[in-house]
Length: 401
Image 1 (cartoon, rainbow, N blue to C red):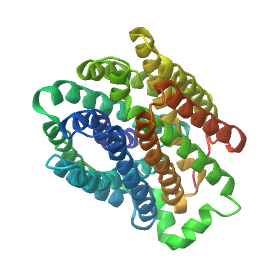
Image 2 (cartoon, rainbow, N blue to C red):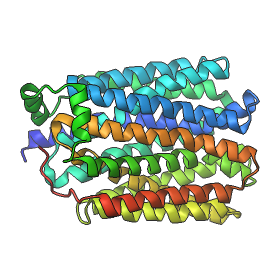
Image 3 (tube, helix red, strand yellow):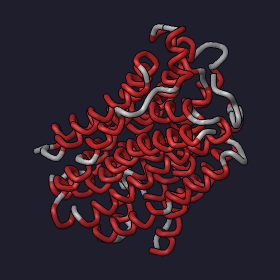
């Protein structure tokens, strides 16, 4: 590969990675802001659950709409559009005066975030060499850990002293720089060539995704995305609150969650190393199994060493699995429907993200134990493992068409 090509791929990874970083900052800070809003606006657990769920409703709509749009107008244009939607909504949410307007803005933010992630992974998958495609997409996902770490730092140092509004403004402002950077990226040559020759309608693309040739991988992805997103948002959006419910103060819970969050980075990096050795399918299965095991142990952990150990390993395995998921999904479809197929799977998954946080809120109101709640997420992850095991095909070294 030429040095020019290498520089181009690194630049694309950096620009697309910033999308992951800023989106993760928003989702990460939201988990801390929910705790602060609960105290500030006197919200009960069910109302706090709706904050996370409305974001996921927006993400489901955004993944579906912008995934379809990416196959029509190109990946680059959609990435710019989604980041604009996300940035403006995030900035305005700092000015919200009540729960209703905050929920409306969270829906808008969710649309931008939900549309951005599958389209970014699709663009990177199409633009890098086959032998390192999986590793590159997992490294792209690793920017999510960086965003969570920054979110945890902002939340730990800013929210207790300056309030959640300042934290939201700090998180939103850098995203405008990423919009400037995105003007310099391009759609892959393969996609451009296909788009010039083939102009299927949106309905034709949806039909193709569910045609006989692709129905098996579509069913597999939809089950997998639903189970992973349901468990992730149910567990991680409530993480600071759950740590508080285990008997630690809000400030201490923020600090402990920061420690758990740092464990995401080695989770990504080990998955990136293994994905070109073991393949996508087995990395997903192993890392999801680790997630299920430590979700169970975290739910029943009562001492600080057990909370931290199980929380660290939960973050390690869960975010490594996310990296493999984003590498695996675009490889299931040809270029002309890749955005549609990946976006629809992500959209269906976001429905799980709606129910996960809501379920936690309502179960807490009903005095259901943390251990029982996390067991539900453990079972969900096992269902996702079975879908990959029995329906998934290995796509390592597969040439994208």
